[in-house]
Length: 285
Ligand SMILES: [Zn+2]
Image (cartoon, rainbow, N blue to C red; front, side, top):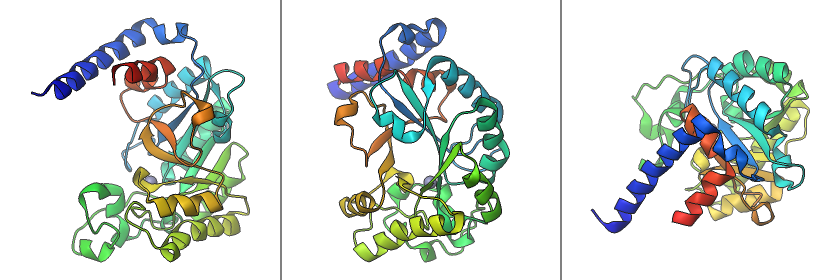
């Protein structure tokens, strides 16, 4: 074992112990923590898609974050005044957002952003279903669905346009762009395809829902430099899948905002939400 991998293993064991300690003592709340955070949720309810958590678990998350932080709308995490803010985001527009998440957002009166892959609204097409079931990282030709012919992957249940219209009309929910077909933008460099997936998707959402759309989410958190440029020209901010919080808001890149993965075990999500956790990470790395 190399020194570096031993250090990483010790650090991971240390962090898991700290997460448990923090769960028992709430020590992170004694630390002056101004690091705003964005939570990344996917499916909530019966197993339906990537990153599923139960509805009860989501309710416990809401109890916790409304007790300890200010829950703000996504752009508010770029403001540094007024204490620590946490924003909620949901990727992929599953039916369970309408069925399980929206009622709880209303009950707790907290805002959220929903990122929609527009061509999957009304049902995930069979030839794209694998995009929710696999990681693009191991697939050189991930963006070509014809290469997955013959494989049966059941697509998750996606919201209809009727449901999405109702969701978009709720003042607590802001709809954001998540491309048209949920491709790996890390492998797309040509401007025409990027504009179709990024600007075209935004235009469809604005037209069909009658709302302004200015937030973007990179599928799988992956992007090329050219993809970021097109997002910068057409949206106000964008979230990635990079795991982290906004320790230094002044230095934050509003087109590559990190998020905290909300489907991890509860004690780790709570620990990951604390600025203390990330400052310690910087100290040991
Ligand atoms: Zn997605």
